[in-house]
Length: 97
Length: 415
Image (cartoon, rainbow over the protein chains, first blue to last red):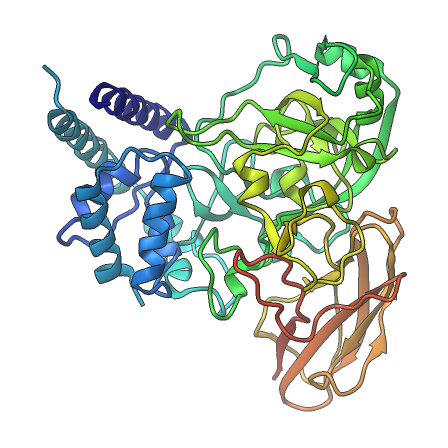
């Protein structure tokens, strides 16, 4: 199990870095707060962080939880339950309703 | 031994380094560029969207409204939608997944087969071009165009008005492509997939299916030209599905595989995404093999129009006659009339329609409006198609924010 997670993570980050360079994307600054490091390290592997402010500030706590759950269950994001909690709390506190 | 924790930390370090590099490059953006990067956005968009969206040019494109860099989601500014044909460099860009290879024409192959076909064939681009070529002018519109205008807001890419365009597409009929492999009578859906994929292997690849009846219509193409040019990379080079009348989700870019199937395709992008509640929208065409008791795949577009001649809130000269106009479209029944109101919807007058480029195309319209006194004018446009469908007067709520065709109001100030 652990090796699968590591392989997926490794693929995620390598992929993200090459794709990011190719797309010439510009910096997206999220609010610096508790958990922003986990958001940057996990979410940016698959998409730029502009998705977060774009979807704000209209989601309530359940709405942000549903988004994090969707990223893990529907899109296969390799995020640990502990990180998912930190990410959810960050999104609710900084980009919530 | 590599632990998950150490890997995360390493990845975090990488992210910080990359971040630092970007920070450095950002200091070289001049203030003039920063000012030029402010697009004109609808006020109804979420506050965060309005803050984050910028004008940004992808390779080969004009500056478009960037909603997300990766995957790239860029919409066309309304002022570039004033004509019935949208230029290739202004055409919107929409991707779900971030790993988008640059496909080479020489090595690209289109595989055609599946358990609903008699055989398997693999076509090169030259072989595809040897099939009879068909041209059609058709609107490609994202299912979620105007999602950002939903009230209450729903999550997703928060599009304004510009996740759409109309082009002259040239390609082979999908029917002729399928004939090369031979379609069995039992086939019910045609599954299409492209070369783009997610950053992690577990992300469901973007794969769609189309009911056979729609796939074999004479107007359904595997297109390799757009407005007389090869498809731009960002619009699906070297070939894409063109499914006139139906929303962009089926218009598979960089299409590389076509499979006929005898059972409903079960993928995430059909079963979970791109679905609308049953019975809420006035749609005719159905995708019966994918329907459940509660929801159904979004399929044909609803009748719609957009005033593009003026920016919302634009100032015009008092005492002048101003020509307002824009484009109207539907699922291919054809635009019958576009009516204009200048008094907030109390009275309506028929606009003049522009050239008819075919039933799937944008239909341009225009109407002169007198501006006799100083003040605010509320201009509205409402399209009606040839089967009597008109734009909605109130939003039809649905969880994913599809099919927004509420009559728009353009505010002009005579001064």
